[in-house]
Image 1 (cartoon, rainbow, N blue to C red):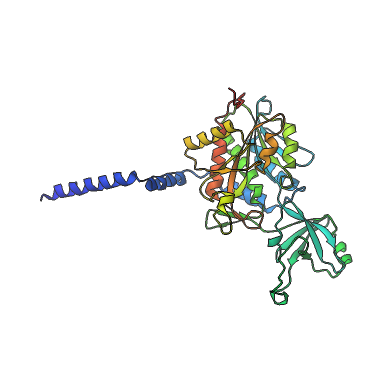
Image 2 (image 1 turned 180 degrees about the horizontal axis):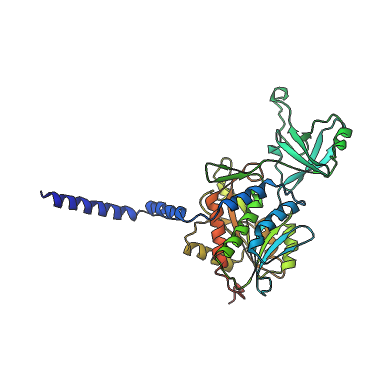
Length: 398
């Protein structure tokens, strides 16, 4: 046989094989992921430095203003003005004179503890400020915030050798305690510690395996970070919006959406896109039949719930599909449990939607999110804003 014919025959066979393989759904999914990964990264060195500074600053519920100042300083070059309120919510505004108003929102606060009781032997007992997890407390280092500065302490726990394995007690809110190295109540008070002092964990930001962000308070400091990045991109790409954009960092979400309830009346928005975190349900001991399926690294999670306005949600879904932004879905019974509820049911009803960031180990000091998901939430909000028209009612009856 002629060598050239043999060669051409082999080439044709290879072409047919490749063409056939390209029709395989798994191959197509793999190629789409490669395409998504090959897109230009959104986060840059300045972004990540801001994120680290923002996360490493403590901002417990009711004490968010330090973090808000960091957030506002970062946003200054990208916005026209700021609004703040009595309890500490902060809003960066683009086009403040526009009549039609669109909110993109995250919450600024993190869970913490309060000093509740100081015993005569100098040990300190606590109550929650937000949904702090008592089971992770033993052996954790803490910062007690006083007028004299930070006082270090530790959540103590009896050594394994001294506990009855037959009747072992788990950590409970009423049996965990903090030791700051004092032998009496008077010595504790001399350091400036008193009932009502707020207590935080000092755990700081780091990155695991290149793309996994780990820290306490990713719930929901990541939300404030992501909406700030949306503002940066709009400014950087010289996008002019036909409406006022209210980049909102609400306080006191962890104790009942209180900051959002206040700031929505100040802004009186027409549309609200809220971002928060949601559970990665692929880790051990989570029942997917109850919690649904959501996996870190597979895209933002679009919520389905009564508070979510369906036409606005459809716009987000259609935008994501058109821009090839990967996403997941979650069904939420009755309430979303996020600031979405506060915006949706305010001012006679505000068209609201929720885009969530998959997160592992919520309300611990090692919360974890994936960089790809962070960037895709930013893309999703950014691209959706470019689709919203001033005066859009999202009415079901139009």
